[in-house]
Image (cartoon, rainbow over all chains, first blue to last red; front, side, top):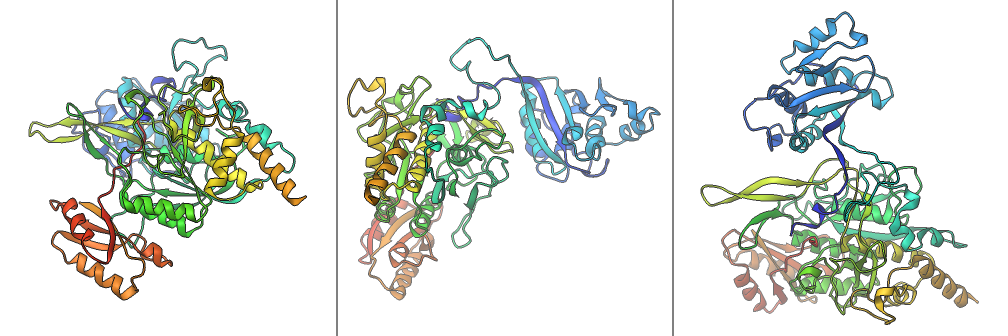
Length: 516
Length: 86
């Protein structure tokens, strides 16, 4: 079984196409042109790195390798690359520009992109070109290389758009290529998010400090830029460090579910406004994992960054911590001690139950640490998903299937295939790349942040602080869903599925009763 | 490279704490020993420490040595944590 992230990406894209938007002005045509041409087309993107024009050099390589079909500026009247030649546009009627561009050593395709960089004034679309490749499998490596080029503002695949009545053809047929209208997100409907926010006297969680300890966050994401107030990814006083990049995208997805900007006519809606701080607890180097037959390179939590983040949360008096991580090993005394300190401080810790239902739901930590709010995942029909771990330590369930949220605006990967060399050593092979900007993912990792955000809103709206009180409030307000067969507790659902409206109603009623 | 995590007795003063860390750092195979959060204000948080060992050194053996030190309350190699898989 591969990692979580490879399965939720059922979005449909046009084969072999990329939209590339140049930065305003960009590097002058011809500058920094063309790297070497050695290497195979697939997986070579790293050769070009993040140099001054590594992405455009990659494009030139594709052109010389005959892998490029067309480069078409979206702006009318500009020169375009087609059929291995540069074709004059209406605005280049005398052909002089075409000759000037085509003469460059970097080739015609890159020149076509550069030609639109300073064009079109404020309209970004005028700086965008459609790049068409001969083979779809070349799209990802080229996308990675272009995304690293400082001359390029953005690069993305081209989603296919459907009529609303798209027929069901399989398990994931309901997942579209772009987020649904924010107002129609199924997960928010399931927890009665809109009704909760419409309650009289509703108070936003702006003053509640919420921590996400995860793979990082993309602070440049337009749906998160104004929402994340703190980001810790490196520590000058401890050895080893990490970049600010969320390579995996997991933390950006979790952060978006909690706090993506609400009703900003962009992407998705988060559940609350809060004082969101993100700690990156993964380093950037994947570790080799071998299952006895095959191997892969995956990212594991860096134990020092993780413990350091937990202690930061103790000292910074964080109200609620989200931990969408897991592992079968019981906590050592320092991990357990940090959790005890957090909870003694009044911090609520929310953790994912884990996604190994198919392997018998092994106990996963930190979800199974005493006092932690352990969250399982329900699907669109309000039933436990096929992956969500079952267990007597589960507290509550929340939506965790086909959850649309934010992803970094730059490419990244969730893991790498491992390839055994002739010397017997394993090396990183093809990357399991993820989408950019937005995608629908599934997992108890996606369910946990629903509860984390709900806890922040609970505390903002009069709920008593402290893990025991919060846990009791969540339990009392949860909906008993059909799969529980009338029981008060079920190892698949805990005490039921999160109901945000009832949670806040109860809190406000209790606060008013106390005041009276 | 691996880390062993340990907790010092919280009643140790600054001088004693630094002395113990220097002793641990001088053990063969240990490249660094320090508090997890060296700038922490609380002595309780300063008690959380780690020792980084060189490649080829045995983390379990170091944990056993640390457990036997009177200033050390507990010492362990960490359990692996990752992102939940499907």
